[in-house]
Length: 195
Ligand SMILES: Nc1ncnc2c1ncn2[C@@H]1O[C@H](COP(=O)(O)OP(=O)(O)OP(=O)(O)O)[C@@H](O)[C@H]1O
Ligand SMILES: Nc1nc2c(ncn2[C@@H]2O[C@H](COP(=O)(O)O)[C@@H](O)[C@H]2O)c(=O)[nH]1
View 1 (spheres, rainbow, N blue to C red):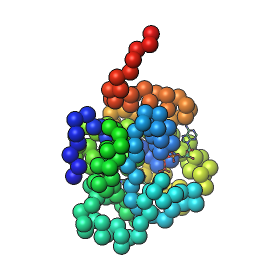
View 2 (cartoon, rainbow, N blue to C red):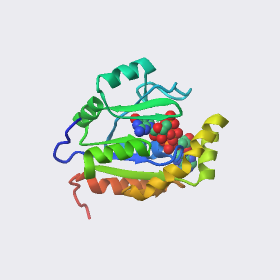
View 3 (tube, rainbow, N blue to C red):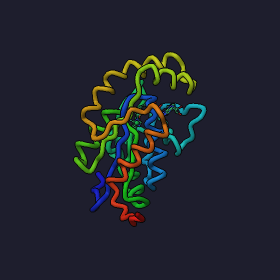
View 4 (tube, protein in one colour):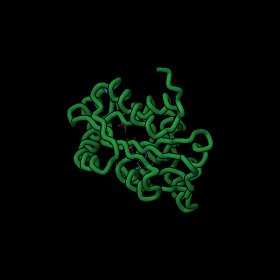
């Protein structure tokens, strides 16, 4: 397991699927110069997804081999597909930035909190069920996948009380504005006061 240095912080974005975690994390993360640690998955890529950008797409055999080599800090199964984060990627992203972020389900968020305690900030992003369904339909997800993800909605939502910050993502610009202000408080960026 990677040992965190001095001021290094890990931000974990969690919440129900389709709430906009990826969208808001990327917008605030790039504004603040944070690096994303990309997960590995055995799920096949969607038409819009790129290897190395959205996920590292690997075969089940490659995943099992990496697991046997003890490369993953955390592994989760969703809809019969494996997902995991490699310890080496956490280390290499910290070489590029003092703070990193990940987008994980509640089980991944819980594991990182157990491993790194209060050096992990849990950010819960949600929207109501109807909005999520609408967004998944607009993204072109098939009906059976939408139904599966919606079946996890209540369980994912119940995790919000265990998170440090909660944002309802209705208006994207407002969410990103509020989120960026919140993350900035953790970053000690030594800004010059121009007032
Ligand atoms: N505030 C918003 N209003 C409308 N659409 C949004 C908003 N935020 C995100 N979206 C859209 O909702 C869809 C899901 O967003 P995103 O992929 O960021 O969600 P996610 O929580 O990371 O879920 P996933 O696990 O599918 O990646 C995307 O098409 C995105 O453009
Ligand atoms: N615990 C982990 N959860 C992960 C990881 N990578 C992604 N996820 C979450 O899984 C679901 C399904 O993702 P999808 O892109 O196939 O819809 C979603 O909640 C992701 O945030 C991981 O490494 N560990």
